[in-house]
Length: 366
Image (spheres, rainbow, N blue to C red):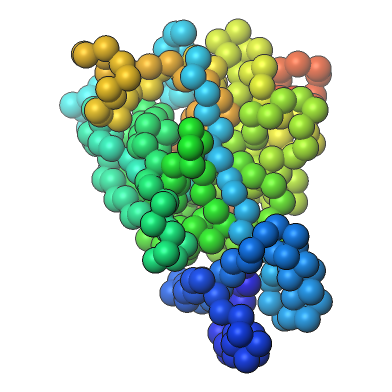
């Protein structure tokens, strides 16, 4: 995939490649970012790798990398315990003036997601929700089917449990690939562009993949535009390499890479470890609503227990959204949450829990 911030430079490259009988299978211009993308397909990985290496040298004015796959960070797994661990401020009486003011403040918060489609549930009744699909990379990619909405619906619902009256904008970038729920760099960048158009203040990314030059550039652009990010730390185990985009938190202060803990404060047994881990949040045996219909479950079952750093990241996104409804300076949120986190594991920051369990009320008082 080629990415350029200079539309003329991209067109010159595409013209040169066209003269060599090499055409993209898809291309697009991003209205909000002001970038252009071009996606190419080759017969096998070896050919693609050769072209990436050649084009990185030949077209140094562009960003050139593979169109990487990203996967959701979820697993099937309980108790409804999460909210009690997050040090949420006491909620005002539902019909009182304080409650009305709280909901009004939350309505000013605009949260973005990169996920599956979100189906409205009872947990989302106070949320203003917008979905936009980003599916096949090209008209020829007819085998790309939208992923089931279960993951995105769960993530949105967990965010809304903490920040119930937000505006939620979901870029539905995930497709079904066998039993997996996946997306690509190309779709993610398009999704980010749309979320920026919606003027979101925070984006949750409950997904992971490998280092990706093009998406790294996108993350840096989001930091420049003062958009906060929460990301799942990864479900690949303690010895796994860093999971991206969460691992970009090492070099960006406006990001939280979120790992998962259980009701006892113990680390999720499949969680990644690493210097990039920012904070921990509940993510083991989490009670979430189902996205109807759910034919694999008995009639009348409306919720289930799930585990994964995806759900921890959702709790962190909800916490940051709540924080934004009370504070006006957004990009300091990760600092406050880290400084006031409840220490877990070895004393001080560590590669398993980061700064510790995030605490909403303590961060607001900091």
